[in-house]
Length: 290
Ligand code: UTP
Image (cartoon, rainbow, N blue to C red):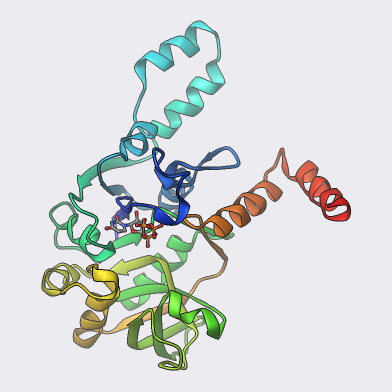
């Protein structure tokens, strides 16, 4: 089996980032020179994904527009002889085959993924959260697809978090297997109360899922926060089939959170081929003077 499609849910309300996200989707906030969502779509493309399915909601049309061809703008840029800029914009609209489905109510991440069931069909698929960035040499999605080629089962990307932060994540309990960075999943718990798990492996926003997840999501009742939780359906899937947790190589940023967003801007700015050197020098100067 091959993974060809990536579902990118972008229908969340973004309440952690208000008031910035009142009129602008959090996925459209800029990291250095492009919106967060563009990095994620570019990661999908660089990993060999053939089709992206956005799960959107009211007020998120800026995301679809960003990846659309803008005839008027293209003409204006041509008239003004801004050829390179026009080409850059056209490249964005030609990045990948894009489809949108609408989540009518923000009933949770699990519900958002279930909304894409008809477009995904009966094949394994990738899920990439629209506000989760991973900076890495090999794209995180590609690292997971390489593992999928070997195991042909569902995979969740995980990172180690301090014990006092486990309550903020879906946590995986597992056993290491011989392959580097890979664990067989034993149990998953959504936002565990302190002291209820010894594991520090937190699920982040990259998954490869078998299509059986859709039936399980349909049967999942609202869990933590009154939302249909993906972790609850994953727990059920893990009882039926093997599932793996993969400690990806790279640094993850939760760009839907104010601090995560600031850290992402710094990191992506510091590695930027044109802006990086000056930014690093400026940060040093600021640190010495503030
Ligand atoms: P978050 O947990 O970041 O939730 O969702 P949120 O509602 O977007 O933001 P906050 O917590 O209120 O600040 C994780 C991912 O799942 C999507 C979000 O768009 C984000 O990519 N999501 C979440 C949906 O698509 N639909 C939902 O009902 C909930």
